[in-house]
Image 1 (tube, rainbow, N blue to C red):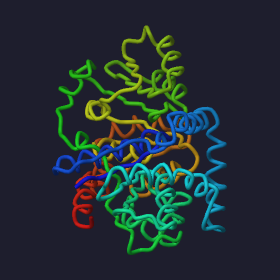
Image 2 (image 1 turned 180 degrees about the vertical axis):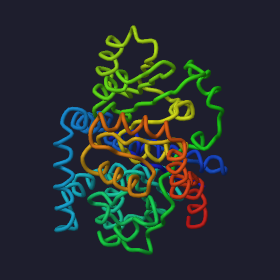
Image 3 (image 1 turned 180 degrees about the horizontal axis):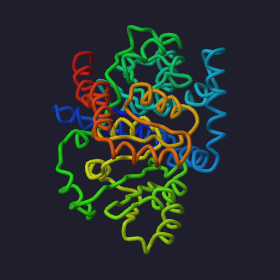
Image 4 (image 1 turned 30 degrees about the vertical axis):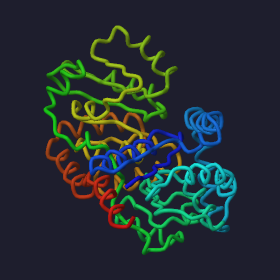
Length: 369
């Protein structure tokens, strides 16, 4: 089969989910093509949308939260939001591409292409199997106004929420959030550290701010560094936030126990190398960490869907999320000092997140396409 995967450059999670599905499909002998569908209207369109999103999240997260809450209100009172009408404009570009290239299924780990597909369907355009993949542990605004054949829900407990929002229950398939195969592979912690050129012995903390280096990354780094004792180390992943990376590199250049990393493709290895992870509650990063079976301390979320992600993980015992930076640092140390409590968290992760979602999505497509 030939499958099209459509994403959008608003955070790295959507791409990560798409690539996980692509990997699973190709492993089963299918052709899978994935790209940012906004590039069909020109690279500048894609760059503009991505830049607006990243700048808002990094510099004005409260604004993002306000927009998210407004979206929740709008989604309750209308079946066609401004988001739908904006993405409908992509219909002519996507139609032309799909008429040129023939696909057996379209997978969408992002709302925007799902809105475009919905417009195309309402206009009577012929479409293959359409499959939406939700990448947060909640039903974000406007999924309910889309009309895909099926929706991959993040967890069985979220099906009811999606139904209340207006998605037909028979279309909801609770397979989870897909992650790359590399997160499932086992690796010896010491070997992972050697590969990353980290100390083989000692306690290793991992701190992340997502692909955009968002959140209180600098403040949390400062607090963690102040609490490090002999034989303890900290690795900080700054993502695409070059300004934060450069500032911290200058500040901690003489601290041998601090390892600063910018953008990396070795996230799976860092998760295998560390003893605990501090991360904002993005849907993909949280799922990858849970699949890696490591204790998770959730830091301040970007208001909106990440708030829901944090709530879901804490509710099920898969993470801890004190509200203050001091509390987060303290809780992480307490977890590592109490192996039994850390094991309880890892057990909860195994119970609620299997890590087999990408393979199961591929099997589902084979069955339905």
